[in-house]
Length: 118
Length: 402
Image (cartoon, each protein chain N blue to C red):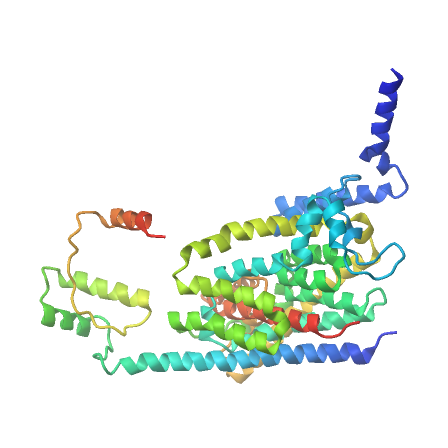
């Protein structure tokens, strides 16, 4: 009545293929992750290594470009915001300048959204 | 005067009411009742309403006598003499009703992959990329499919093909279930789809008892290390890599995996915002409506009020329960192997009802340890399960089940 051979055969095959496929994916995706992280680390020695987020970077900015009339606390906040949105502190701030637009930030965002080219 | 009476009598005989009082007419009333219950569940209890509501109404429409919207005999592949014949598409075009035409999208395997396109465009594979070991949990939960296959094959009321079509309910994935069922067991499609979506809605009820039974409190309290951030490059390469690996390995997964990954690539590329918007909104909605109503339409009284439907309802529960259990058990294995770094509760999220199963893991985890935030960790196995169930579907569609 029930062809046990066929039923067990399909079950074992199915489970095996699913596991093999996903194990293969584990290896490949893990490799991709390692390569990607390796590439990111290679760029690090080129730039100045940032161990802490706030003080060293702030010092870089103030020393090299002058503060452009922007208070250092604001700069620290900007650095923290960039670090949070990028998810890492792999960057060097070259300069912080106040934008010249007379529009408020919200207005500007609205303009950009509505004029975005197709 | 005579003409008037005769015309009225004629209309009365042709009306649906007359047909209800014919021999099997009571079955029609039962189907009305069932579709009414499903409509109630969809609206009042919010059981997966996006699909269950069109399915329920499709069921209602198809059972209205003389409606002519759907003719299951056009798609059965069996002629009046009981011989197996290829589907006569010309006949469908000439004699079909509205739902016959829309059903072609299901029969030809168009709608489910299009839904997967939208799903891929809505899915964030980040948690999975940052912790690829989650793939194992996505694979483990698919054991629910195969053990259900054995259970269904044992029952004398199902052929092997039908057993395969039913077992895919364990994948906890609507489009996958519908695609496999439409190819392997189209006569059971209505029951399978309704069972699949109903159980997906019941995941928060079915899973927790099993999860608590198979884990200790200590295991449930495990707090996992935060996930690393995933770069955009990785997120863009991922869909291409997965498509390549999986489709080369199991070519029959191409429609589902291909569309899933295309949707994801569109999203992660960041340069085709309009396409992503359409795929995740309008396209999904259109296809969902057509898919739901036509799948519901296959649930005629003749095909639904059978012993097999009862079997399917029972087997659906088996599928979800076993999938949850095997996912948790593998989660425990990982807990042991990583010396307590993995919380076994995320294993049940391999049952790919996204994001419901992940939310359940989060809730059971926070019941044990209120500060624990397992959701993102559970999303890894959850989305891995979508890929896993698509692979399982591909296997079931490619092995000989004659």
